[in-house]
Image (cartoon, rainbow, N blue to C red; front, side, top):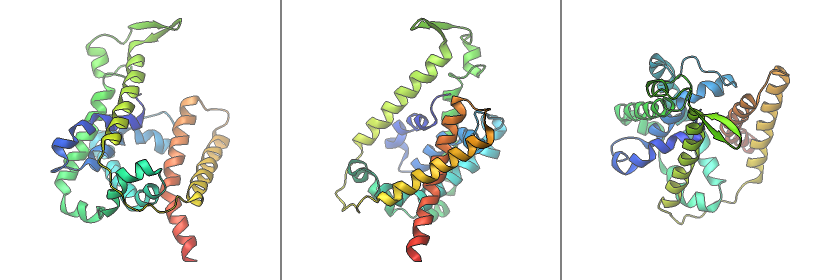
Length: 243
């Protein structure tokens, strides 16, 4: 599959046209939501999220959850602890009251999420074995000889589109307008807690499934652990500072 965090590249080019009426947060969350079945399972296995019914039963609810977790738990702590070149471009997000926005823009947010989800499924339909356009254009068995290896064309499209998507996201971030707010000192404690939680979760998962794991499972588990850590860390630090 194309790398999950490259998928927002499919919706970012529409930001200048759609951002005023629709939600970029919703589009971005929707563009990644179908892959979160992998992260919930900590396994490279998806039964529901890439299906038509899964759009409504899994993808849209999960995308809504992702927007809440990001804006209400992850956002401020993460942005405050990013390198300054990212902080200057993202600091304005801290001014958004997400729960109020959700209440006032229910339809626009839902449509934005659906747009993101559809972009994900459309992208995957060209890059997955057995997917619609892979079969429609009859290239499921087409291979290319690369570095003395026979590689399926859909695999080449997966990895190539991931690289292109990553470049699109990097360009988008670099072109974002910058502000000059005073950035708080980056907290070493924040990143130590994130790292500790991530390593603990990955290690625990690997112990429980040993020896039945693959590179794919390790990657999915690591990303899942990192996201869990980003959600939990601000809560831990707030509780400790209140004691």
